[in-house]
Length: 382
Image (cartoon, rainbow, N blue to C red; front, side, top):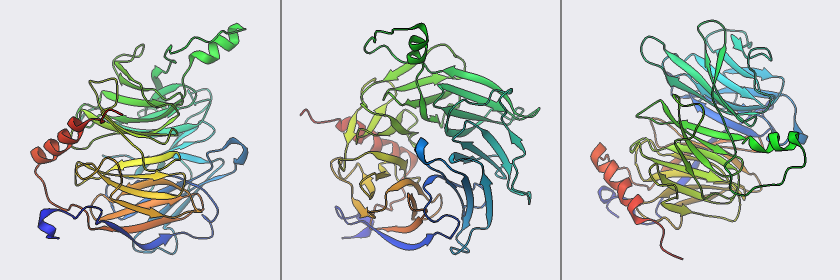
């Protein structure tokens, strides 16, 4: 196959280069990962358990390509780390969400492993697990703010000008799909709240964001409206584990769920344009390729790391790598090289070289046109 013409069908492969693993991480579940914006070879990895019955302490390890044997830095937390994110404009700041509802901000330049800011019960701390933390740009004068999403139903913005001050952007309410008879007032109140599982802010308009919920619905919201959803997207029948806007087409996003499905959406349509499924198990994580608009990666509970190219196929991934009995839990593309990292439930983060896929340097217009074409394909009627 002439490489200039793009890859041959199913010609891609993942080659394991090395594994980030040490005695500290052994046997722990990799919950979340984030590349540092200033030092793109530094990967922060959060370790913790998703299950209530397995809760213990948590860890954040900073791994570098310079030393795969042992982390550069270690943060220990009292409970599982469930989310983390580096700030864009101040890449020395790392936000960490914990299983007990804490949101903490660390300054990675400091020697000590204590957060510089931490949410408290009196100051709006979440009452349940923080599944997502995201930094958003508030403009040149106001800098960056931090947003957290929790299964307590709150999407909360934190400002750091005076300590960690919070405002709730929205309290997620269940959408009335089927009415349940409630015996008590208390039960009725509990069932009205929806648990937030994930979120992403629109790359073009940072006032717009999407939130995936435990009940399977996805909501589009605006920072300006805290009482209502702009749009609700229905289709998933299990908890939504990840929602991500396309880096090339700001009206399209992907989602994945416990219902085995990955869905491609256009923000103006309440139903998915495409549904993709590679296995009969939950899809734990997805991420778009930063280089080609139709390529994304996914990981599934039955032990597969998958790379998809929707311009080649929406039925099957172009690359599948089986790592079972280990279960992959999260996946990230390297921002500046053909490398993919996948964390799993044994405490390993495998670093793969991705080859044999489309490496054409498309213009922005071509990227948009290619993804538009995939959206237009829609699902064939069953």
